[in-house]
Length: 92
Image (cartoon, rainbow, N blue to C red; front, top):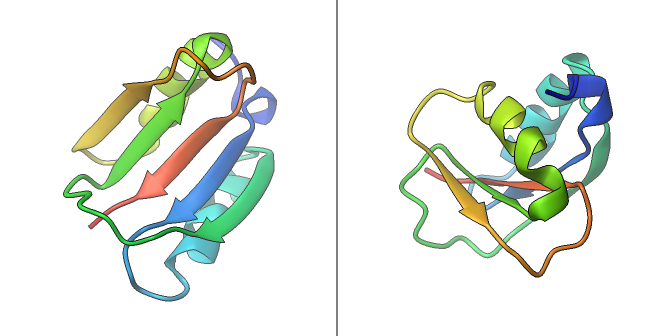
């Protein structure tokens, strides 16, 4: 399994609450995750704590990232992605 320092993540704040994305990104950076970006996302219907979206090159990365969130966390595999980044969509 990859170490956190080898696992690029992008944080997308879909909570509708300002400042949550940068706060979670800072916590992940303290845990040595390389941050690809932090953005606000359109607040959607995300009842989970987080939804992790990843492609074939990031399967192990998604499993490691998932361990850093309290349940419920949903994993979404996107076979079209060709990078090793895990998008973390923050839900309610």
